[in-house]
View 1 (cartoon, rainbow, N blue to C red):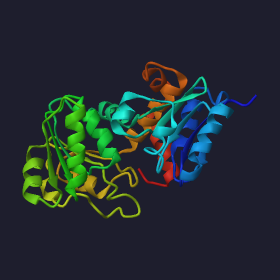
View 2 (cartoon, rainbow, N blue to C red):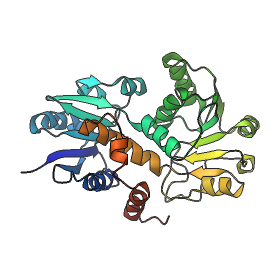
View 3 (cartoon, helix red, strand yellow):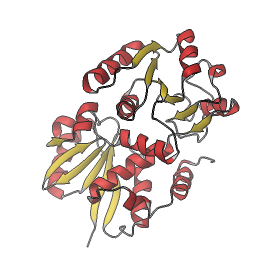
View 4 (cartoon, rainbow, N blue to C red):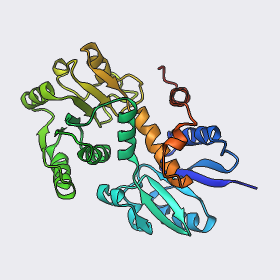
Length: 296
């Protein structure tokens, strides 16, 4: 008897680490005979028909990646409040032929921060970028007790829009917006910052020599740098920060934990620790980096 089918949909989909991540975890949980995780390449024009097949063929759950995270929302039967806030879905759970959308990106960030002992309480945060990843992280931060959030983007329009959404949908108001080219403000904010987060793809393979930060000299030992890029395992920004005494982390743990949060939803678990206890995070990191062909 074939087990329940899980999967990830996107276009393209060949680059996704999700099948390796989930099938490895399912094996550690001794659920690999009950569940199988597959990639599905689904174009935008085929999305509605595919979701109808999901209902009829009883796929148990899906991850959603580019370009469907926003366009899929009106095609679902129900949306979790956080996914609704973010305007993006990365996880679908099938319940009685109905599809409910969730977003686990923010939780993934918070879990990764906790695992790596990154203090968010009263943190003064500088964030680079204002896209989808920035939105998920920013909403998570506003509920985590930070003191200040400074948004920097090449074009301020998206950052201004993100600030407006945060102000209207959360109780957090200590948010300012600047152009990334405003070196004076950036230098001043970094001097007071305890956490720098890069949510842009700058520095990602094959452009690993690039850094999103125009002022590496403003990095300091009182800073923690969290780069959402995970390929390469040490980005140019991370090297610059480490050289100046800062703690540095890449984005692989956020990827892992958003995936584990998805799996928790599919398995109907209330507590992620039941899954965490049965897997080795260092071993999972190694497995994923081996797939990427990245030296750790």
